[in-house]
Length: 445
Image 1 (cartoon, helix red, strand yellow):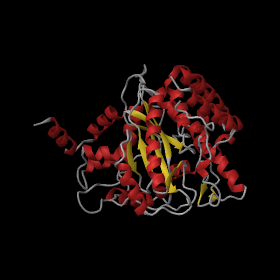
Image 2: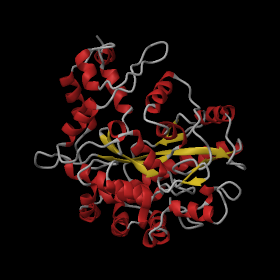
Image 3: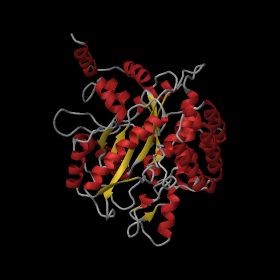
Image 4: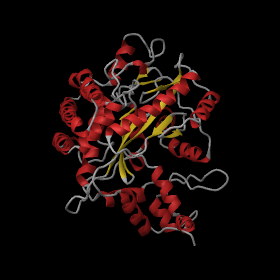
Protein backbone atom coordinates (compact mmCIF):
# COMPACT_ATOMS: atom_id res chain seq x y z
CA UNK A 1 0.00 0.00 0.00
CA UNK A 2 1.31 3.48 -0.86
CA UNK A 3 1.93 6.06 1.88
CA UNK A 4 -0.92 8.19 0.52
CA UNK A 5 -3.35 5.27 0.56
CA UNK A 6 -2.24 4.34 4.07
CA UNK A 7 -2.80 7.91 5.30
CA UNK A 8 -6.26 7.95 3.72
CA UNK A 9 -7.19 4.66 5.39
CA UNK A 10 -5.99 5.91 8.77
CA UNK A 11 -8.03 9.12 8.59
CA UNK A 12 -11.18 7.12 7.78
CA UNK A 13 -10.73 4.52 10.51
CA UNK A 14 -12.65 4.93 13.75
CA UNK A 15 -10.71 6.53 16.61
CA UNK A 16 -10.93 5.75 20.30
CA UNK A 17 -10.96 8.24 23.14
CA UNK A 18 -7.35 7.41 24.02
CA UNK A 19 -6.25 7.79 20.40
CA UNK A 20 -7.95 11.17 20.17
CA UNK A 21 -6.15 12.42 23.27
CA UNK A 22 -2.79 11.23 21.92
CA UNK A 23 -3.41 12.83 18.54
CA UNK A 24 -4.39 16.16 20.06
CA UNK A 25 -1.28 16.26 22.22
CA UNK A 26 0.90 15.44 19.24
CA UNK A 27 -0.52 17.74 16.58
CA UNK A 28 -1.54 20.85 18.53
CA UNK A 29 1.73 21.66 20.34
CA UNK A 30 5.06 21.33 18.55
CA UNK A 31 8.25 22.15 20.40
CA UNK A 32 11.23 24.11 19.21
CA UNK A 33 12.64 27.62 19.19
CA UNK A 34 10.44 30.45 17.89
CA UNK A 35 11.46 30.78 14.24
CA UNK A 36 8.46 31.83 12.18
CA UNK A 37 5.62 34.32 12.22
CA UNK A 38 2.42 34.49 10.21
CA UNK A 39 -0.83 36.38 10.08
CA UNK A 40 -4.41 35.69 9.03
CA UNK A 41 -6.21 38.87 8.02
CA UNK A 42 -9.99 39.01 7.74
CA UNK A 43 -11.60 41.96 5.97
CA UNK A 44 -15.13 43.13 5.42
CA UNK A 45 -15.80 43.97 1.77
CA UNK A 46 -17.81 47.16 1.14
CA UNK A 47 -18.91 49.18 -1.83
CA UNK A 48 -16.23 51.71 -2.71
CA UNK A 49 -18.53 54.76 -2.90
CA UNK A 50 -21.59 53.80 -0.85
CA UNK A 51 -20.32 51.40 1.82
CA UNK A 52 -23.52 51.57 3.85
CA UNK A 53 -25.31 49.71 1.04
CA UNK A 54 -25.09 45.88 0.93
CA UNK A 55 -22.86 44.30 -1.71
CA UNK A 56 -24.76 41.73 -3.77
CA UNK A 57 -23.66 38.12 -3.95
CA UNK A 58 -23.18 38.48 -7.69
CA UNK A 59 -20.65 41.28 -7.25
CA UNK A 60 -18.77 39.35 -4.58
CA UNK A 61 -18.70 36.20 -6.70
CA UNK A 62 -17.30 38.10 -9.69
CA UNK A 63 -14.65 39.81 -7.55
CA UNK A 64 -13.55 36.59 -5.88
CA UNK A 65 -13.34 34.81 -9.22
CA UNK A 66 -10.95 37.53 -10.38
CA UNK A 67 -8.95 37.28 -7.16
CA UNK A 68 -8.56 33.52 -7.50
CA UNK A 69 -6.92 34.15 -10.85
CA UNK A 70 -4.50 36.64 -9.26
CA UNK A 71 -1.10 35.24 -8.18
CA UNK A 72 -0.74 35.62 -4.41
CA UNK A 73 1.77 34.26 -1.92
CA UNK A 74 -0.93 34.13 0.78
CA UNK A 75 -3.87 31.74 0.76
CA UNK A 76 -7.13 33.49 -0.10
CA UNK A 77 -10.37 32.19 1.38
CA UNK A 78 -13.87 33.54 1.88
CA UNK A 79 -15.80 33.60 5.16
CA UNK A 80 -19.52 32.75 5.44
CA UNK A 81 -20.69 36.37 5.19
CA UNK A 82 -18.44 37.16 2.25
CA UNK A 83 -15.52 38.48 4.30
CA UNK A 84 -12.18 38.00 2.60
CA UNK A 85 -9.31 36.28 4.42
CA UNK A 86 -5.62 36.24 3.54
CA UNK A 87 -3.45 33.70 5.37
CA UNK A 88 0.27 34.30 4.98
CA UNK A 89 2.80 31.52 4.56
CA UNK A 90 5.07 31.04 7.59
CA UNK A 91 7.76 33.73 7.41
CA UNK A 92 11.29 33.54 8.77
CA UNK A 93 11.06 37.10 10.10
CA UNK A 94 8.59 39.85 10.89
CA UNK A 95 9.69 41.89 7.87
CA UNK A 96 9.33 38.94 5.50
CA UNK A 97 5.75 38.55 6.71
CA UNK A 98 5.03 42.28 6.40
CA UNK A 99 6.40 42.54 2.87
CA UNK A 100 4.74 39.37 1.59
CA UNK A 101 1.28 40.23 2.90
CA UNK A 102 1.56 43.91 1.93
CA UNK A 103 2.32 42.95 -1.66
CA UNK A 104 -0.65 40.57 -1.70
CA UNK A 105 -2.92 43.26 -0.27
CA UNK A 106 -1.80 45.71 -2.96
CA UNK A 107 -2.86 43.19 -5.60
CA UNK A 108 -6.17 42.41 -3.85
CA UNK A 109 -7.08 46.07 -3.45
CA UNK A 110 -6.38 46.75 -7.12
CA UNK A 111 -8.71 43.95 -8.24
CA UNK A 112 -11.46 45.07 -5.88
CA UNK A 113 -11.08 48.73 -6.78
CA UNK A 114 -11.60 47.91 -10.46
CA UNK A 115 -14.94 46.39 -9.43
CA UNK A 116 -16.03 49.27 -7.21
CA UNK A 117 -15.23 47.47 -3.95
CA UNK A 118 -12.91 48.03 -1.02
CA UNK A 119 -11.47 46.22 1.98
CA UNK A 120 -12.69 47.52 5.34
CA UNK A 121 -10.62 46.99 8.48
CA UNK A 122 -13.33 47.04 11.16
CA UNK A 123 -13.92 44.36 13.78
CA UNK A 124 -17.70 44.30 13.31
CA UNK A 125 -19.72 45.69 10.44
CA UNK A 126 -21.27 49.00 11.63
CA UNK A 127 -24.16 48.91 9.15
CA UNK A 128 -25.19 45.55 7.84
CA UNK A 129 -27.14 42.74 9.46
CA UNK A 130 -25.65 39.24 9.21
CA UNK A 131 -26.30 37.73 5.79
CA UNK A 132 -24.88 34.46 4.49
CA UNK A 133 -22.85 34.55 1.28
CA UNK A 134 -21.62 30.95 1.31
CA UNK A 135 -24.26 28.26 1.05
CA UNK A 136 -23.04 24.75 1.72
CA UNK A 137 -23.69 21.98 4.28
CA UNK A 138 -20.82 23.12 6.53
CA UNK A 139 -22.18 26.60 7.08
CA UNK A 140 -25.81 25.48 7.12
CA UNK A 141 -24.92 23.17 10.00
CA UNK A 142 -22.85 25.84 11.75
CA UNK A 143 -25.69 28.32 11.55
CA UNK A 144 -28.17 25.78 12.92
CA UNK A 145 -25.88 24.92 15.80
CA UNK A 146 -24.96 28.51 16.73
CA UNK A 147 -28.55 29.72 16.52
CA UNK A 148 -29.28 27.60 19.60
CA UNK A 149 -27.33 30.08 21.76
CA UNK A 150 -28.72 33.26 20.20
CA UNK A 151 -27.78 35.75 17.47
CA UNK A 152 -24.07 36.05 18.35
CA UNK A 153 -23.13 33.11 16.16
CA UNK A 154 -24.51 34.65 12.98
CA UNK A 155 -22.75 37.91 13.75
CA UNK A 156 -19.48 36.04 14.22
CA UNK A 157 -19.95 34.17 10.96
CA UNK A 158 -21.06 37.04 8.75
CA UNK A 159 -20.17 40.49 10.13
CA UNK A 160 -16.89 40.16 12.03
CA UNK A 161 -13.26 40.51 10.98
CA UNK A 162 -9.94 40.13 12.78
CA UNK A 163 -6.16 40.17 12.75
CA UNK A 164 -4.91 36.74 13.86
CA UNK A 165 -1.21 36.55 14.70
CA UNK A 166 0.43 33.14 14.41
CA UNK A 167 3.59 32.35 16.40
CA UNK A 168 5.56 29.20 17.15
CA UNK A 169 4.68 27.42 20.39
CA UNK A 170 8.28 27.76 21.60
CA UNK A 171 10.72 25.63 23.53
CA UNK A 172 9.69 22.80 25.81
CA UNK A 173 10.17 24.36 29.23
CA UNK A 174 11.48 22.47 32.27
CA UNK A 175 9.01 20.98 34.70
CA UNK A 176 5.64 19.24 34.39
CA UNK A 177 3.81 22.17 32.79
CA UNK A 178 5.84 22.25 29.57
CA UNK A 179 4.84 25.22 27.43
CA UNK A 180 2.94 26.90 30.24
CA UNK A 181 4.82 30.22 30.24
CA UNK A 182 4.31 31.08 26.56
CA UNK A 183 0.80 29.59 26.60
CA UNK A 184 -0.05 31.50 29.79
CA UNK A 185 1.37 34.74 28.37
CA UNK A 186 -0.80 34.44 25.25
CA UNK A 187 -3.97 34.32 27.34
CA UNK A 188 -3.07 37.08 29.83
CA UNK A 189 -1.52 39.41 27.28
CA UNK A 190 -4.54 38.68 25.10
CA UNK A 191 -6.72 40.91 27.27
CA UNK A 192 -4.30 43.80 26.75
CA UNK A 193 -4.34 43.18 22.98
CA UNK A 194 -8.17 43.23 22.99
CA UNK A 195 -8.16 46.60 24.74
CA UNK A 196 -5.35 48.19 22.71
CA UNK A 197 -6.75 47.26 19.29
CA UNK A 198 -10.50 47.37 19.97
CA UNK A 199 -12.26 48.55 16.82
CA UNK A 200 -15.89 47.41 16.81
CA UNK A 201 -18.09 49.71 18.93
CA UNK A 202 -20.98 50.18 16.49
CA UNK A 203 -23.62 47.74 15.23
CA UNK A 204 -26.43 48.84 12.91
CA UNK A 205 -25.35 52.47 13.34
CA UNK A 206 -25.66 52.42 17.14
CA UNK A 207 -22.99 52.14 19.84
CA UNK A 208 -23.18 48.87 21.73
CA UNK A 209 -21.46 50.07 24.91
CA UNK A 210 -18.47 47.84 24.12
CA UNK A 211 -15.33 48.99 22.30
CA UNK A 212 -14.88 45.45 20.98
CA UNK A 213 -18.32 44.13 20.18
CA UNK A 214 -16.61 41.42 18.18
CA UNK A 215 -15.02 40.08 21.38
CA UNK A 216 -18.37 40.32 23.15
CA UNK A 217 -19.94 38.17 20.42
CA UNK A 218 -17.28 35.50 20.88
CA UNK A 219 -17.99 35.40 24.62
CA UNK A 220 -21.71 35.11 23.95
CA UNK A 221 -21.20 31.99 21.85
CA UNK A 222 -20.30 30.16 25.04
CA UNK A 223 -17.31 28.66 26.84
CA UNK A 224 -17.79 25.19 25.35
CA UNK A 225 -17.10 26.47 21.86
CA UNK A 226 -15.16 29.74 22.27
CA UNK A 227 -13.54 29.46 25.69
CA UNK A 228 -9.96 28.70 26.68
CA UNK A 229 -9.03 25.66 28.77
CA UNK A 230 -7.79 26.10 32.31
CA UNK A 231 -4.27 27.54 32.49
CA UNK A 232 -3.04 25.90 35.69
CA UNK A 233 -2.44 22.52 34.07
CA UNK A 234 -0.25 21.01 31.37
CA UNK A 235 -1.43 22.75 28.17
CA UNK A 236 -1.51 19.49 26.22
CA UNK A 237 -3.67 17.75 28.79
CA UNK A 238 -5.92 20.78 29.27
CA UNK A 239 -6.48 21.29 25.55
CA UNK A 240 -7.13 17.59 24.95
CA UNK A 241 -9.75 17.67 27.69
CA UNK A 242 -11.35 20.77 26.18
CA UNK A 243 -11.49 19.21 22.69
CA UNK A 244 -12.99 15.96 23.95
CA UNK A 245 -15.58 17.68 26.13
CA UNK A 246 -16.62 20.26 23.53
CA UNK A 247 -19.97 19.68 21.82
CA UNK A 248 -19.86 18.24 18.33
CA UNK A 249 -21.09 20.91 15.93
CA UNK A 250 -22.14 18.49 13.21
CA UNK A 251 -21.78 14.98 11.83
CA UNK A 252 -20.84 15.21 8.17
CA UNK A 253 -22.49 13.23 5.43
CA UNK A 254 -21.46 12.66 1.83
CA UNK A 255 -24.87 13.81 0.61
CA UNK A 256 -27.75 15.80 2.03
CA UNK A 257 -27.73 18.10 5.06
CA UNK A 258 -25.33 17.33 7.88
CA UNK A 259 -26.70 16.18 11.21
CA UNK A 260 -26.50 18.71 14.05
CA UNK A 261 -26.62 16.79 17.34
CA UNK A 262 -27.74 18.50 20.53
CA UNK A 263 -25.26 18.26 23.38
CA UNK A 264 -23.15 15.38 22.05
CA UNK A 265 -19.50 15.85 23.07
CA UNK A 266 -16.65 14.36 21.07
CA UNK A 267 -15.80 12.18 24.08
CA UNK A 268 -19.33 10.79 24.14
CA UNK A 269 -19.19 10.26 20.39
CA UNK A 270 -16.05 8.10 20.67
CA UNK A 271 -17.71 6.03 23.41
CA UNK A 272 -21.11 5.56 21.80
CA UNK A 273 -20.12 5.31 18.15
CA UNK A 274 -23.45 6.84 17.15
CA UNK A 275 -24.78 8.07 14.78
CA UNK A 276 -21.59 6.52 13.32
CA UNK A 277 -18.11 6.03 14.75
CA UNK A 278 -15.92 9.17 14.56
CA UNK A 279 -12.77 9.08 12.44
CA UNK A 280 -9.50 11.00 12.34
CA UNK A 281 -11.08 13.20 9.67
CA UNK A 282 -13.92 13.96 12.08
CA UNK A 283 -11.42 14.93 14.77
CA UNK A 284 -9.56 17.23 12.37
CA UNK A 285 -12.85 18.86 11.40
CA UNK A 286 -13.98 19.14 15.03
CA UNK A 287 -10.81 21.10 15.83
CA UNK A 288 -11.73 23.68 13.18
CA UNK A 289 -15.11 24.26 14.86
CA UNK A 290 -13.56 25.38 18.17
CA UNK A 291 -12.87 29.10 18.48
CA UNK A 292 -10.81 29.78 21.63
CA UNK A 293 -8.95 33.10 21.91
CA UNK A 294 -5.67 31.20 21.52
CA UNK A 295 -5.87 28.14 19.30
CA UNK A 296 -3.00 25.61 19.32
CA UNK A 297 -2.41 24.33 15.80
CA UNK A 298 1.18 23.18 16.18
CA UNK A 299 1.78 26.91 16.50
CA UNK A 300 -0.23 29.40 18.58
CA UNK A 301 -2.95 31.33 16.77
CA UNK A 302 -3.89 34.50 18.68
CA UNK A 303 -7.45 35.27 17.62
CA UNK A 304 -8.51 38.16 19.87
CA UNK A 305 -7.52 41.24 17.84
CA UNK A 306 -10.11 43.25 15.91
CA UNK A 307 -9.45 44.10 12.27
CA UNK A 308 -7.56 47.39 12.06
CA UNK A 309 -8.27 50.55 10.03
CA UNK A 310 -6.17 51.95 7.23
CA UNK A 311 -4.04 50.38 4.54
CA UNK A 312 -1.21 49.41 6.90
CA UNK A 313 -3.00 49.35 10.26
CA UNK A 314 -2.78 45.55 10.55
CA UNK A 315 1.03 45.76 10.72
CA UNK A 316 1.03 47.34 14.20
CA UNK A 317 -0.59 44.42 16.10
CA UNK A 318 1.54 41.91 14.20
CA UNK A 319 4.74 43.81 15.05
CA UNK A 320 3.84 44.42 18.70
CA UNK A 321 2.71 40.85 19.34
CA UNK A 322 5.73 39.31 17.62
CA UNK A 323 8.10 41.52 19.60
CA UNK A 324 6.46 40.68 22.93
CA UNK A 325 6.72 36.95 22.29
CA UNK A 326 9.87 36.42 20.25
CA UNK A 327 12.31 38.91 21.80
CA UNK A 328 13.46 37.46 25.15
CA UNK A 329 13.76 40.84 26.90
CA UNK A 330 10.38 42.06 25.69
CA UNK A 331 8.76 38.73 26.57
CA UNK A 332 10.08 38.96 30.13
CA UNK A 333 8.77 42.52 30.44
CA UNK A 334 5.38 41.47 29.08
CA UNK A 335 5.21 38.53 31.46
CA UNK A 336 5.96 40.71 34.50
CA UNK A 337 3.58 43.41 33.29
CA UNK A 338 0.52 41.22 32.84
CA UNK A 339 1.10 38.94 35.82
CA UNK A 340 -0.70 41.29 38.27
CA UNK A 341 -3.63 41.52 35.85
CA UNK A 342 -4.18 37.78 36.12
CA UNK A 343 -5.73 38.24 39.56
CA UNK A 344 -8.67 40.00 37.89
CA UNK A 345 -9.43 36.86 35.89
CA UNK A 346 -10.51 35.20 39.16
CA UNK A 347 -9.22 31.88 37.92
CA UNK A 348 -11.72 31.77 35.06
CA UNK A 349 -10.59 30.98 31.52
CA UNK A 350 -10.65 33.65 28.83
CA UNK A 351 -12.69 35.26 27.47
CA UNK A 352 -15.31 34.50 30.12
CA UNK A 353 -13.72 36.35 33.02
CA UNK A 354 -13.81 39.92 34.42
CA UNK A 355 -10.43 40.90 32.93
CA UNK A 356 -11.39 40.08 29.36
CA UNK A 357 -14.84 41.60 29.82
CA UNK A 358 -13.27 44.88 30.98
CA UNK A 359 -10.92 44.84 27.99
CA UNK A 360 -13.77 44.36 25.51
CA UNK A 361 -16.12 46.80 27.21
CA UNK A 362 -13.82 49.62 28.34
CA UNK A 363 -10.63 49.21 26.36
CA UNK A 364 -7.80 51.42 27.61
CA UNK A 365 -10.21 53.52 29.64
CA UNK A 366 -9.46 50.82 32.23
CA UNK A 367 -6.47 52.27 34.14
CA UNK A 368 -4.70 48.96 34.75
CA UNK A 369 -5.02 47.85 31.14
CA UNK A 370 -3.75 51.24 30.00
CA UNK A 371 -0.72 51.03 32.31
CA UNK A 372 0.04 47.53 31.03
CA UNK A 373 -0.34 48.64 27.41
CA UNK A 374 2.08 51.54 27.87
CA UNK A 375 4.69 49.18 29.33
CA UNK A 376 4.18 46.58 26.61
CA UNK A 377 4.48 49.12 23.80
CA UNK A 378 7.69 50.47 25.32
CA UNK A 379 9.10 46.94 25.45
CA UNK A 380 8.01 46.23 21.87
CA UNK A 381 9.54 49.45 20.54
CA UNK A 382 12.80 48.61 22.26
CA UNK A 383 12.75 45.08 20.78
CA UNK A 384 11.73 45.77 17.19
CA UNK A 385 15.19 46.87 15.95
CA UNK A 386 16.66 43.68 17.44
CA UNK A 387 14.13 41.70 15.38
CA UNK A 388 15.17 43.48 12.20
CA UNK A 389 12.06 45.66 11.92
CA UNK A 390 12.28 48.47 9.39
CA UNK A 391 12.25 52.11 10.52
CA UNK A 392 8.80 52.34 8.95
CA UNK A 393 7.38 49.53 11.10
CA UNK A 394 8.95 50.98 14.24
CA UNK A 395 7.57 54.42 13.37
CA UNK A 396 4.10 52.94 12.85
CA UNK A 397 4.16 51.32 16.29
CA UNK A 398 5.41 54.57 17.88
CA UNK A 399 2.71 56.58 16.12
CA UNK A 400 0.04 54.17 17.36
CA UNK A 401 1.36 54.46 20.90
CA UNK A 402 1.35 58.25 20.73
CA UNK A 403 -2.10 58.48 19.16
CA UNK A 404 -3.89 55.91 21.25
CA UNK A 405 -2.07 54.10 24.03
CA UNK A 406 -0.65 57.02 26.03
CA UNK A 407 -4.09 58.69 25.90
CA UNK A 408 -6.02 55.60 26.94
CA UNK A 409 -7.72 55.35 23.55
CA UNK A 410 -8.18 52.76 20.80
CA UNK A 411 -9.53 52.93 17.21
CA UNK A 412 -13.05 52.32 18.54
CA UNK A 413 -12.91 55.74 20.20
CA UNK A 414 -12.42 57.39 16.79
CA UNK A 415 -15.60 55.74 15.52
CA UNK A 416 -17.50 56.75 18.64
CA UNK A 417 -16.27 60.35 18.34
CA UNK A 418 -17.64 60.52 14.81
CA UNK A 419 -20.95 59.08 15.96
CA UNK A 420 -21.22 61.64 18.75
CA UNK A 421 -20.32 64.35 16.26
CA UNK A 422 -23.40 63.61 14.21
CA UNK A 423 -21.94 61.20 11.64
CA UNK A 424 -23.70 57.85 12.08
CA UNK A 425 -20.89 56.24 10.04
CA UNK A 426 -23.21 56.39 7.09
CA UNK A 427 -23.11 59.85 5.53
CA UNK A 428 -19.49 60.86 6.03
CA UNK A 429 -16.18 59.24 5.14
CA UNK A 430 -15.82 55.50 5.49
CA UNK A 431 -14.92 54.56 9.09
CA UNK A 432 -11.88 52.71 7.75
CA UNK A 433 -10.46 55.89 6.17
CA UNK A 434 -8.68 56.75 9.41
CA UNK A 435 -5.05 55.68 9.46
CA UNK A 436 -3.13 54.39 12.44
CA UNK A 437 0.34 54.88 10.91
CA UNK A 438 2.15 58.10 9.98
CA UNK A 439 0.85 59.69 6.79
CA UNK A 440 3.14 59.39 3.83
CA UNK A 441 5.24 56.59 5.37
CA UNK A 442 5.27 53.01 4.16
CA UNK A 443 5.98 50.63 7.08
CA UNK A 444 7.58 48.19 4.65
CA UNK A 445 10.53 50.53 4.20
